[in-house]
Length: 453
Image (cartoon, rainbow, N blue to C red):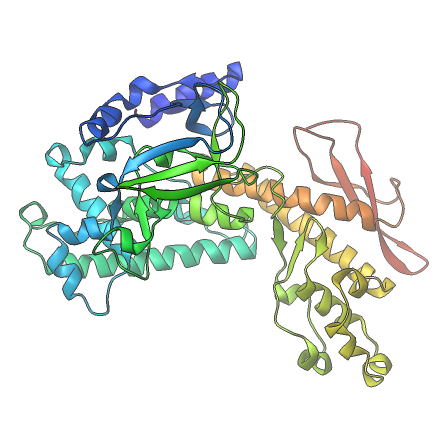
């Protein structure tokens, strides 16, 4: 199915709030897999859903222990597949050894180049034409005005890795004599598509099950199985039965309901980087805090252990709480050995002192304003990429995480001072935050506006 048609059908699904069956669009893939000893989709049907896009719908009620899908191992695409291809000699001779992801990415690009001559054409045609990981942002979108530091740094790092692997892929191709690659220098777009096909769709497989699989990289692509969407609450398991790879659900699904699997306990930043989407109200979510926003006095730096600096749904991480606690100690308290307390106190105890709570309140408001500033700049950008729009969704989720903590730490409700709107959601009230001074100290006022954006 073409990307434009898929978007049109998804818009129709969104308008009707009902899934749209698209089995006919994948008929070629299903037929091709059946000719290769696949028993068929069983209880599942491909569909377009209003919230997640393409996924799999249950045709009948499913109980815990039901086999969702069973794919012949011969249909899995792994480094063993690449080693059996015309790329095999170059891959084996490469020093240092190439990763499984690079091998499969290069194999995918080569098979796409073959076009109708590829024996894998029906599977390749079923893949998205592009992905929504940050590496698909336009260069102009990788800006500090549009993305917060943690996301911008991760996006740039992802692109640097991609370009390094692209250069390695080009070196490997120069060592081959494949007819269809004569005079071909793989483009960034061709390699990027292969790289993120693997990154977003691969499953993990025991290397002993696929001879030739690189032992340190046990990943494989599984046609049809890669249509499953992720839910952090889904429970399932995988197994190999004979020469088939199977997924078994531990959940119940009603007929007509979307069937989910679980990609792992990831926060939304990891989901965006690895898969190109975010999960609303993700319990794993944590908002990164730039280290330079929480400076430490030189005297306190020796007592600061390494740790992530984030704010999650339960509050400040231990690493952040430690930095805030140490930064709030007076010289006398440090001289009295209070810095050693960080090793025995929980995050909620570290953030209990009033000085720490004030610092955390200031940090929360600064984060909210910074994220809102990025969102405002994104909304003003003409024709943003699909990838940037998913980045926007991540920032909205981060704001929801921060919103509850801002309310908790507000000194008092009200509308004193200049109230500046910093966050709004179509699903809830506009939240406003203002800063004022009370008894010589800065404090924060939070209220809900009466209107919705």
